[in-house]
Length: 353
Image 1 (tube, rainbow, N blue to C red):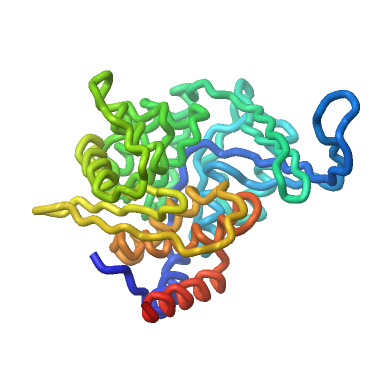
Image 2 (image 1 turned 60 degrees about the vertical axis):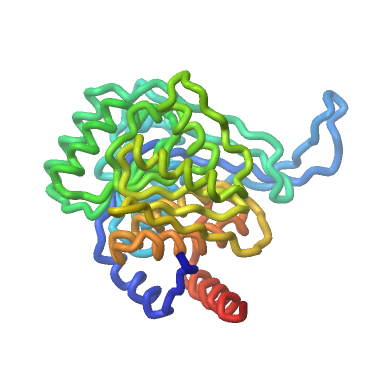
């Protein structure tokens, strides 16, 4: 297929229509803590840098960052998850969600669980070390039923459900089945950003967005012991295409996007009589921080799909936004004016070739 061309009017329409949508993000919400300081010398106690503390900041991570990438475009965004009981971390999490206009109607507290916290020690925007505090056990079935009962009682008509799986136990075989059945019954668009350990039960989604490594692991999961050669050269488009076709078939997906880092992304759509495939290259930018890029991809893709019903247009726009995000430090999002500027630049670059 030829490269996607986007009329700037489409972007205006994108921002206008996004405000009318209700999207539910279900998954592992994480509190990202950044402790920043300066480094001037090495410790005499061990060969490690001494960080002179300057400030401590907090951001939403995991499913929370997916929600931010929706809420920033005025989408009515709801976050569904199980978090720890009353604590300083849980209180900070709810405060950040309120600041971002993300609805917390479907956040349940469980005193037996730990709110996931990733603490990063940073000097001059360089991460020195990360400390994780989290509960990796599967969420209790009773909690999932309580959560679904609240969702059903709300009678909110959701346009899409995004499964944001960070492997912390919120998304498991039982919870996935409960939420997927709810979506199918109510004709709600479904998309999932996967985690390797859960490929055994992902099935029947409208869209899945694994990175290249996760896509390879997805095929390995269905092979279950049979011979499978890992695809290690992402430049081989024919091999990536074979990989994508296999995943679409085995996981009974309608659409698939394999993100490939600096190689761009490959987009697959199941259409009779044959598969539609498009490879999107990256656009040269200074790479600063890849954290949160996957969250941006699935959020923008789902939002665009619901509005335009075109996976290739959605993937192009997500590719643009992800390129903006990786040029920033920490999990972030693409500002509307940044998106417009980037698209104009890409279109000019395309027309000059």
